[in-house]
Length: 408
Ligand SMILES: Cc1cc2nc3c(=O)[nH]c(=O)nc-3n(C[C@H](O)[C@H](O)[C@H](O)COP(=O)(O)O)c2cc1C
Image (tube, rainbow, N blue to C red; front, side):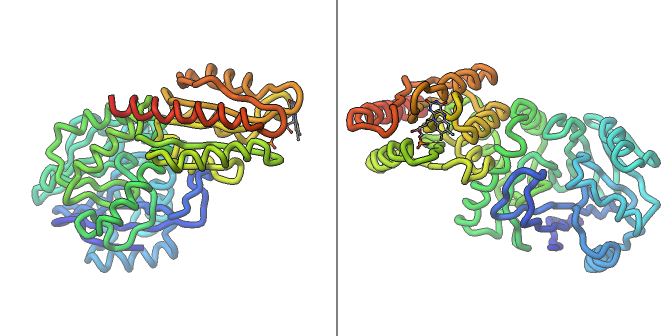
């Protein structure tokens, strides 16, 4: 647990979570932080909570003691959204203070009842409602539904210009007590940028349109600091994470970066021979390439690369008259996350009937993915010289199309 000062009267309590699948599903090789904030006016408020506090209430007492905060003095608990990674601690919080008011959206209040059977002392807030904590800390609220739960709000401290943005502007990656952009080295900022794409594509990406609306809604606020529910706090250059998020939103429909992601699977190495040929060929082209074998690599990793990439190469054989199953699973997930408008090419081996291509076409159409494909190459058994040559020509054509579409 890290306890740090964000700015005058505002503190962050943050916990790193590791060795779990986030949402029970997404691999987080570099962990994730869950951040909570305390605002000390004449009255004290806590914004969101962190799940997984150990030894509550003792450890929490100790931490709040460090900040010279009497837990019983916390008058307001502001719930930006009810997802249990931020709200799962309410029961524990009640152990240290049972006399507090909850501030949240109408939808959060309904979820609070459903998840924790809590109905008392709730103030419902809507767009532009305010809460005066004293000492100039007037908090203003804005509803940003579906970023990423339907009940989500952001809380803005008008005195310090701090936006408590919940899941918006968040990233994966565990933090230290230097989790502020002004305290991090450029390579550490790059690390969090990679983790932000992974977080965005895995967790928020399906809600890119609501995220776009949320960014537009927050734009008029005089934001000086962005304090998200996950990842680092942006104090020196908050516009960096806003601009990054604007890019991530736009990547959903493409074009994205000048990158190609190869997603491939192979049972007996026939398709793999052609994948290796393509990988060697691409080394000579000046374009960034990510290559992921399924099912060996996780959905989350594949999705993060695909989100960033304008070009996608799919390579898989036919399996029981359909596509190699882990490829179908990954592609369905890309479809559900609405990864659209990619420039793409597919090749793969078959034994007798084929069938992979038919399922690929069905998935593309079912999820309205709108990928622009160069004609596929299928080969029986092992790829011959002429198959590899044809595949190579089409890969070069893809590189050209990707570059043109990014630079137009
Ligand atoms: C379990 C299994 C099911 C298969 N089903 C089909 C099929 O329905 N139609 C077909 O044309 N080939 C089928 N094949 C043959 C493969 O597509 C062929 O062996 C191909 O070369 C495998 O490529 P890979 O080594 O890249 O996995 C199947 C192979 C296996 C092992």
